[in-house]
View 1 (cartoon, one colour):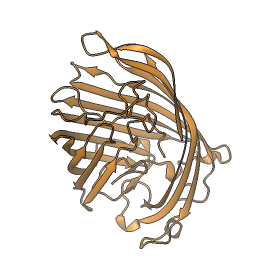
View 2 (tube, one colour; view 1 turned 120 degrees about the horizontal axis):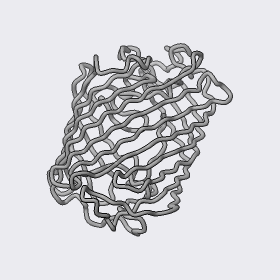
View 3 (cartoon, helix red, strand yellow; view 1 turned 45 degrees about the horizontal axis):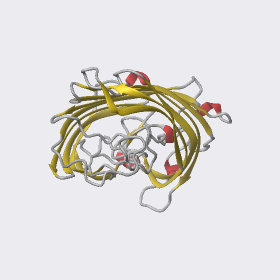
View 4 (cartoon, one colour; view 1 turned 180 degrees about the horizontal axis):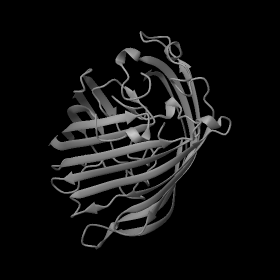
Length: 351
């Protein structure tokens, strides 16, 4: 369930000329949501960057999130917004005895999988700043986010922790405005209109024109704990295949292959149209996870490559199918549909 409330509006100046774009307006948006997921088979290989495939176990997880967030635009040409959220998170971890891999409790204990024995309820708060200007006549799109989150477990304080995240995305368009799969703040989960108040999604694919873009992304996420606290393993970010949010990174590895409280990811990508709504994309990922914040750096990075077809058509969610290789462990074929559905506003991450 998801409710979007638009509270106010203000015109936005855009481009490098300083002239206002009359058709574009920015709104304060309040999202109120409740969502629940159940995953029957999630891989767990232990914690840290040096785990082995032979250490694989599996578990099931249910998570329910009830909360709200707010996106407050700040007038100006930088497309600056303040973001905030408050969520209640309720997780249940269970064993899985249906496959060839052992269930998590058969291989790991609380010391090697923090939070395995007990999953308390969490109050989670978050604050951040987002900057997303279109520069040089919309040939360069920047999407920067700096966020800080607090996870508070009132009934089990040893699981409380904080996390900060820096996510820097760059898109260089070859023929004008670069295509984007980012959700629109003012849309609900079943809306795809490009302007507020539009009643229908585009009836004709919006990608018939030639498009192409080069993308560069840097993502750094680090967790902060007290001396006696730990980050529950189910809230730790992962690299490999796709994570629990369905976002791929180091795609040739198994899903959830590397897990730790701290993460670094570098991505270079190239996307270009082929015919109508169809295109192709190439991605090169480098990344690592780390048990300690001091170990996050640009040395000893793991790498993968991926290429495949993309689909961008009207209000249809952004879809791609890719073949990933590299990394020295396995190859992987990934089919993915944008989790924002029809381009709706941001949903809370599952970790």
